[in-house]
Length: 412
Ligand code: HCA
Ligand code: CU
Image (tube, rainbow, N blue to C red):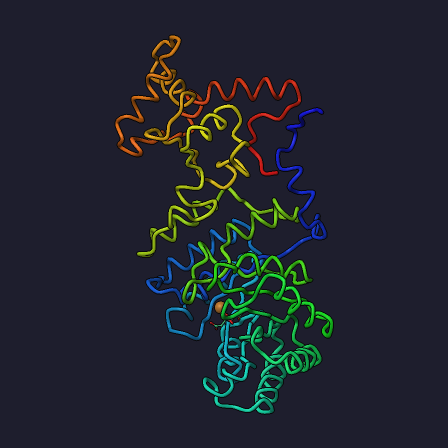
C-alpha cells in the first residue's frame, strides 16, 4: 500500500464532522467584558482600545464590552465607537431600562441583554417569579426596539433552566423582535452531546440565529462551544487565553483554529497574531499565559522526547497539527536526559562538529548520564531555524519534489 503524505491529517478528518465545511461561523470576542471578570484583570481605557484594535485587525466579527460597569468602561466604549472598527461593537447590559438608556446615550448600534431563567437564579439571585421574569424580558426587548437598537438576548444559566420554560421564553424573545439569542452554559455543566441537544431544542422553536457561550469549569468550554455550532449556532464567544469569570470560557486561539482546521469553516482571520494577542494580555495584566496553553503557550511547540525530536527533524507534521508560524509561535527542541541519537547528531551538526560513526550515540548517552533533566532548549528563531533545520528542509524539499508534502507554512 502506498504512503500518502500530502495531508498528514487526512485520515483524522475522515472521522471529523464535516457539516460546517465552507460555512461561516462568527467569533464574538468578550475579552473586554467576560475577560475582565477574571481575577487579576483590569484594563485602562488605552489598553482596552489597543486590545479592540488588535482583535479587529485579527478579524473577529464582534467585540463585547459592558459600558455600564464603570466610567472608565463607558469612556472605552465611546472611544471604541470613534475608532470605527470593522467588528460589531456589542454593549453588554442588564435587561433594565436604565442600562438601555445608557446604550442609547452612547449611540450603541448593538446591545446584548441577559437575564437568568433558571429556578435557582430566579429564587436566590433575582428574587422574581417566572411570570415576572417573562414580563421583564419582553418589556426590555420592546423598550430597546423602540429605540432602534439591534440586540442579542442571552438566557443566562440556560443549561440549568426548565426546557419548557426555556423554549417558551425563546419563542417570546424571537416574537418580540430580538435579533439573536444567546445560549450560554454559564456553569460549564454540559457534556458536548448535551450542549448539542440544548441548542437543538432552542433552534427548533426560533427563527433567529444563536450564540453559544460556554464556561470552562470542567475544561469543556471549547468542546461544548463546538458542539453548539454543530447543532446550529453560528457564533461562538471567546476571550484571549479563555479568561473570564472563575476559569473562563473557550479561548480565541483554540476556537478559531479548531473551526478552521477541524471543521474547515471559511474564516479570514490573521491567525499569526494569536501569540501576539496573548502577549498583549500578559503585558497589561499580572496573568501569565500558562506554558501548556494550546497553540499560544510556550510548550505548544516544544519537542522533547528523543523519538519526537527525531521525527520533527525529518518532518514537522509528525508532531504538529499546524506549523508554529501560522499562529505566531516558535518551534523549540529540548536537549537533555530524554535526547536520542538523532537529536544528538543534529546537535553535532549545529555545533559544526564533524560526524563520526558512533559519536551521536556517545553524545546522547552522555546527555542521559548527566541526569540533569532538561539541559537546554534551542530557541529556533527564524534565522536559527534556517541553519538548524537544514536536514529537515532538505528532506522536506525532496518530499515536495516527490509530491510527498514538505515543510508547511500554511494551515491546513
Ligand atoms: C454574566 C453571565 C454570562 C452571560 C453570557 C452572555 C454567562 O457574567 O453576565 O451574555 O452571552 O456566562 O451566562 O457571562
Ligand atoms: Cu459567561
